[in-house]
Image 1: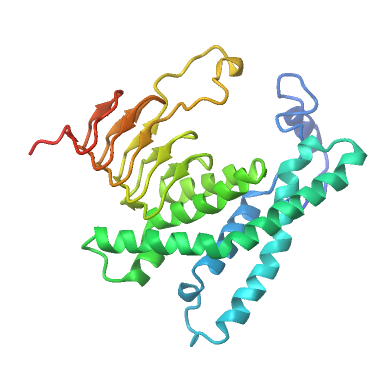
Image 2: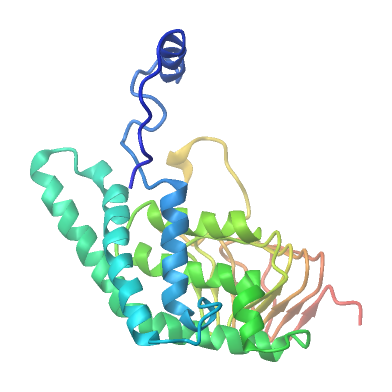
Amino acid sequence: MATQRRTAPRSPYSALAERVLSAAGGMRAGLASEGPLPSRRDVRILVEELLEVLFPESHRMGTDGGDLRGHVAATIESLETRLAAAIYLGLHRRCTKPARVDRCRRRASAITRRLLEALPEVRAQLGKDVLAAFESDPAASGIDEIVACYPGLYAIAIYRVAHRLLRDGAEVVPRMLTEHAHSRTGIDIHPGATIGESFFIDHGTGIVVGETTVIGDRVRIYQGVTLGALSVRDRGRTDKPQGRQRHPTIEDDVIIYANATILGGNTVIGQGAVVGGNAWITYSVPPGIRVGVGT
């Protein structure tokens, strides 16, 4: 999975390379001393293959469809090898002792198999997300347009895969997947967030969904929405509250309009509530209430 090595150049570049490698606080081990992770190219190919499996009907331009089942089967076979290797690289920081290497490889293979077995369920979930977009957006001309063009669906699809990988014990790779989606769409969904069915993101740019956010079913959010923590402390990692919800809960059938900010682990937006654009919410909102809406 690692990037192909280049032939070592002659001095003076060798001397400069040594200076670069030794510049991380004087530590020869460097900034990523725990070892290599999948490259950005590796992650991009993983995403392409995952979407090829989840939305195969929309990824076959210039063909008559052919043997769709065979095409999906071949893509899954390629994906299995690639994904297992990536997950192992995410785990191997904890496998420095030789006796643990095989254990980490077996764990990576097991996580990969569980993800592959879950792909039908993920596809069914995404089908509901697509229908939610079609029903919510009058500008959508059809299901195929949503699958091909909507950045919100792209980010949701990658999140749903990354969330399962994280839940099953994968490390780093789930975050790399969602950060790839972030770079492509401007939508930042942490893979640890919990998101229900029929989720619709309209436009999407600038959306942030924090790690412990809980979102119910049939929720709709617009561009610029932040579901974040109430405060940021500067006393280091030991001050991070472990096992506590730091981000809000959004119950079923909530609509959150553009650029609204909702903060805090104790903040609950009740079922059917509507949060208007540019609202700043750090308190719970009862079900059915309209907050910051002018009409």
